[in-house]
Length: 197
Ligand code: 5GP
Image (cartoon, rainbow, N blue to C red; front, side, top):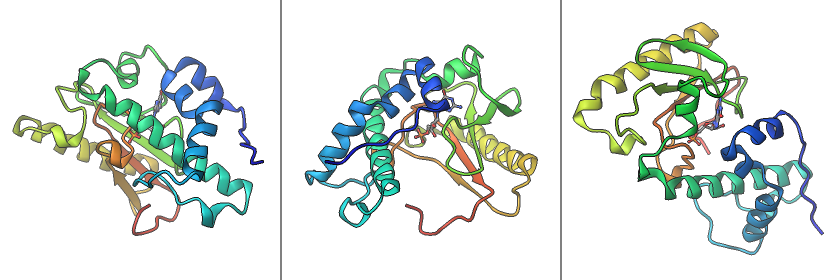
């Protein structure tokens, strides 16, 4: 029988204050989604094929993490157009803590709670204005979209990664978007592979 190792670290503490993370790290969800994967449910872009990876606990972690990402993304997409507040609204309002690395009147940049690289910063517009995801952009958003990219450059400089960093926008459930408030991921301080996974 496959076990599902899970380290109860700062992720769990964060999960207690953040239902989004609770969903991501739930044992039950992890087991369920992993079981679905192993039963041969159709693969999607967010899922890693299971057979080549079943040789170590580390691989099982990767499979579970991918399945969690997919489940989170689908759950988030279901309420994406409700216009309701997201966890990022609470971060903007400073109702929940974050580590801010840059801020101006239009954007906020803070460290991702689940970093995928030594530097992993999110840059978000303070006023969402319908920009739940990039595919909802309208002509009126052109200025803030440019501002977000310029802020990404400032963040890269502040973090000392201007010679090599990646800017990612996950758009929609097939790209594993999980928070429906447009955001740029700024990733750096590790080698980046191409094509991305
Ligand atoms: P997405 O999957 O939508 O492209 O990215 C959302 C990101 O938000 C994820 O990388 C996730 O780790 C991050 N995130 C979710 N909740 C929080 C939070 O409460 N605080 C911080 N700092 N990041 C969060």
